[in-house]
Amino acid sequence: MVMDEEKSMEAWIASVRDIAHCLEAADFEVMDIDLIIALTQGLPDRYDPFIISLDTTPIDQLSVDSVITCLLNEESRQLRFHDTAALSRSQLGRRLGRSIPRLNPLPVRNNPPQSTLLQLRWSQSPCS
Image (cartoon, rainbow, N blue to C red; front, side):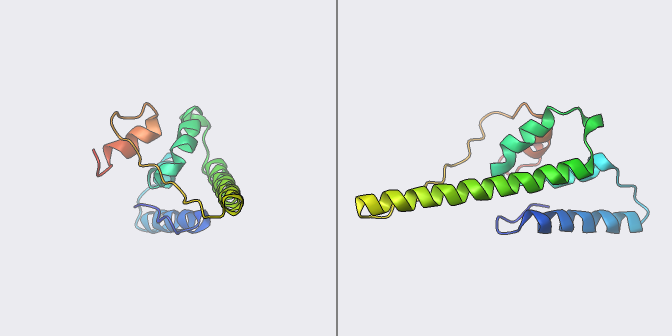
């Protein structure tokens, strides 16, 4: 399961929780760590730094609620950064008399990441 780039974090969290509820309804036990891994594993690459920061927290200290709060905060931070960057490009373009295109760097996947959560994503990546 992979988060669509156009999907909001709230919608992503809801879809992962829906699947967890379906599994529980079918008598499968879904532990908190399973839900945390599902929430983080399907995120776009732009969340890799966030996942690395989560990886510094011992697994037994992670809770689903705290991870969800962090995910929502990270989405908000990324949206603010994107809006600020777009505004800066627009202002610069006006000064130069032309539009400034947005650059999208290509992800580099030469070596497996050192983060535990990222390693889980790496092992299931279609690029590996």
